[in-house]
Image (cartoon, rainbow, N blue to C red; front, side, top):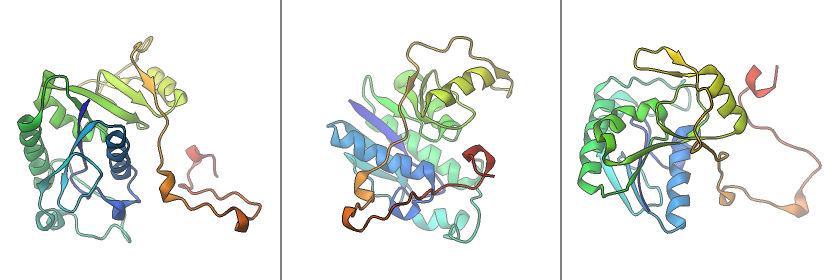
Length: 212
């Protein structure tokens, strides 16, 4: 199979941006699909280095830093999908995919609505899928959720139309799927001889994570 996987316009798809869940989802997804023998084409900012068949630079690093300098380690994320960096990312990604696409190719919109401008431009020339829905608003006909709990929540909450109005998903679709979020075992060192008797939780301290 052939997959077209864009990164994020305001980050770089590499290990440096390990704090961005969407960036790392793209990074690991490329490696996982490529290791299974699929053709994987990644489109991202200069400096991206996911494991793939081909990586295509769609935004130069110097240009990206004009909008998104490396201040993420001491400032909250802030981005604008209407700025010139995002517009250039979308334009060049659409052009690059159209140059490489083939019949029955997949377009993986890992960033949800952030990738919708690309999906809209490609229309039915590829099969667009949201491969890891753990967020509220989805737009694809073909959806992969990260848990059955979240899938049920979205069914009940509804999905927005072009005017932002929520429409409940009555019975779901037979082709909706659940694939839990994935991790690379190589990122974790296990030392059984030195292991102490405790668990470590890493996550945001917010109510929906179960921590008050």
